[in-house]
Length: 191
Image (cartoon, rainbow, N blue to C red):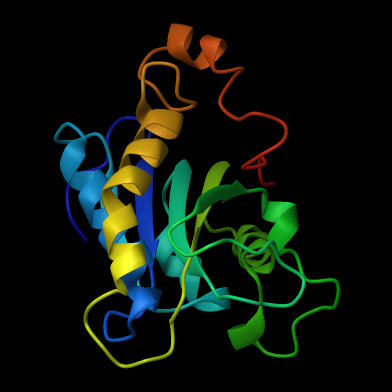
């Protein structure tokens, strides 16, 4: 964990495995984004877990920005070219069937379970997926095309979320310009 939470409790979560080639891109983008923000603006956490194991990563923050790799050809999801970034709505990650185990529970299940247990879970959520080529090979370097895209991806996420007209720009006037804390079509409010 890095940094201290601001008065809004903003968390940046980088997801990925640091020893798998492109799977690590969420970690790298989250780190780079965090370094660009003013001190105290957000807290950085990195995780190599998913499902219910994210409970304590997300617990205690009002809002969370999650950055992760999107596996190529993953059934039922949007396909992205390597190095392409897209903001996803929580509903796009929802699984139609209930999870069989806590390990394959989705993010929506995790948030609902946390709230049912009385945990303080994020009220606002932004999810960014990054297209990758090779998330399975053991290597501590991303493929060239994904590595070259990282600075552009960081800039795009920073502008969309923390920029002057971003959804989490400082101040209420900025939030009004951005259409409120969350736009209806992406990063849905979670209950």
